Length: 160
Image (cartoon, rainbow, N blue to C red; front, side, top):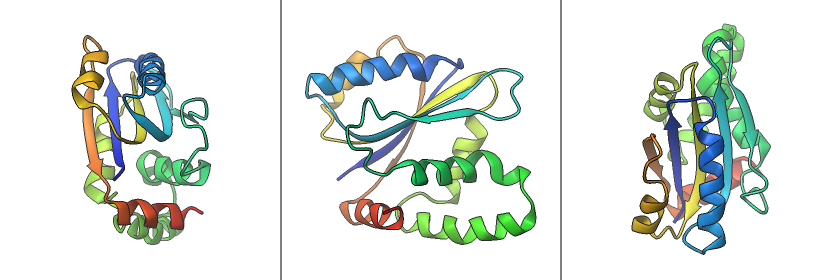
């Protein structure tokens, strides 16, 4: 079973620093990263910068279409017209089937503001206490959405 986690950091570069920790954990076999992306929202910016972490997730299990759509729903829908909003509403409905619902999107949108950053990761096989120890001392807020195997398969199917 895979777990989708969102780790929010109180600075625009916090997620970039955490990326290094995540790479080290994966090299040690303490976590398997299936896919990951970073959102950096510098103070004063109109919108956040996003990037998929191809260097952490070897094959990019979900791909750019997934991250682009998810980040569009979280950060850009409130700024778009009603026609785009209606179309993305249908797409958002398909994400509910894979464990990412309106509450998740609203919670992430409320937490990630200018001056912060976030690390979005799809993982499995984490040795929780060792992962927790590796991130000790890094200020972050963990928001989590667990995905069942069936939900993970649907997610891959939606964005294949």
